[in-house]
Amino acid sequence: MNLLFVCLGNICRSPAAEGVMLQLLEDKGLATNFVIDSAGTYAGHRGELPDMRMRNAARKRGLILTHRSRPFVEEDFERFDMILVMDDMNYESVVRVCPDRVFKNKICRMTDFCTKFKVDYVPDPYYSGHEGFEYVLDILEDACLGLLNFIQSKK
Ligand code: 4NP
Image 1 (tube, rainbow, N blue to C red):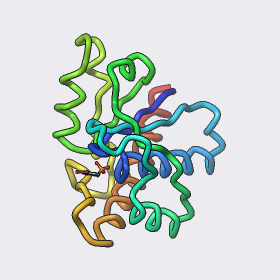
Image 2: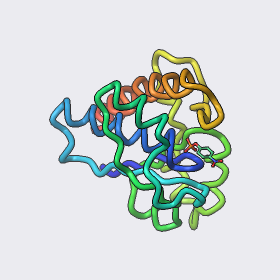
Image 3: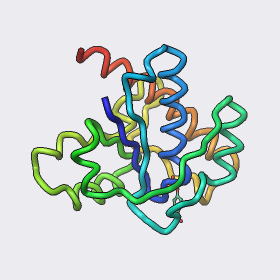
């Protein structure tokens, strides 16, 4: 199963989602069954490590984020089974480069897998304070667990 997490800059939300999901899969002994990656719909941070504020917040939860930002590309529709977007703007950007409508059902909203949080997008923490990054990680932990349960229920 190949999962791609997508946000705008690929330096806050989606690399954090990647880190949370990887840790969850490792904890459950499932990591070898998955390919996990992340990408951004805006290429301006290409090559950068995740934002220092997100790396610090993640490190406090035992997650070391080492992903380098890369833009979302059309070929990602072929390479990945599910494309998990953080908000509606990401959804629209990804749909815009979708080469064929058969791929469209690969695009999912990350928050659709939340079971505790009643939210319909993962808020962009870039212009927020420290609490914004913690809140994003809280939502992502909930969503990643729900996503894994969903995938396992489909087998
Ligand atoms: P992300 O956060 O989409 O969660 O990586 C952002 C990072 C950078 C910018 C916006 C959002 N930016 O405008 O540069």
